[in-house]
Image (cartoon, rainbow, N blue to C red; front, side):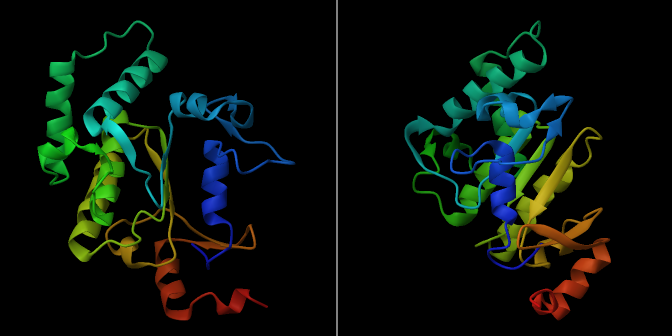
Amino acid sequence: MGPNGSGKSTLVSTLMGHPGYTVTSGTVEFMGKDLLALEPFERALTGLFLAFQYPKEIAGVTLRSFLFAAYKAQTKARNPDAKVSSPIKFKALLEEKMKGLKMDPSFAERAVNQGFSGGEKKKAEVLQMHVLQPLLSLLDETDSGLDVDALKIVSEGVNTMRENKDFACLLVTHYARILGYIHPDHVHVMVDGKIVESGGSEFAKKLEEEGYEKYAA
């Protein structure tokens, strides 16, 4: 958590390998590997996942085709001997995941995020997470622009992932409202690119009441 411009989105984008950012010092290790030495696609194959604050549209590529390609790559990366699902079996898996997120199966045949509402784009991000089963998800303001119903569905999608003991999540947000549905293990406040205070889930409620003004000095 933290005020606008504090570096929260920059942090997760940098971890994922966004070319707009250069790391000038420090190290990041993930799953025993030097994360900063890996290309973005290699970071994804190690189990890292980024849900964008503003998901991009990909014209001409259906959501199903996009996810099937990513699913095959992830499966092979984690287990080279694994047999990849056929398109028919994957279609069944995808529809099962979409049902859980209350998404119309027809969305799978539409171009990625094209014509989707803000809430639908965020649901599509959570759907990708459910299909790919990452080890660490970086959720960049997934709650922004969501109405209450969409917020509940997205939150339920994250909570379902938490049932997997191998799953971890770094959730970036300004507000505590999503934390009414997702109960964090730890809450950290970032200001000017640094963690200035940390606490438990109850700390988020305090931040909601007091704001970030005391960190501005």
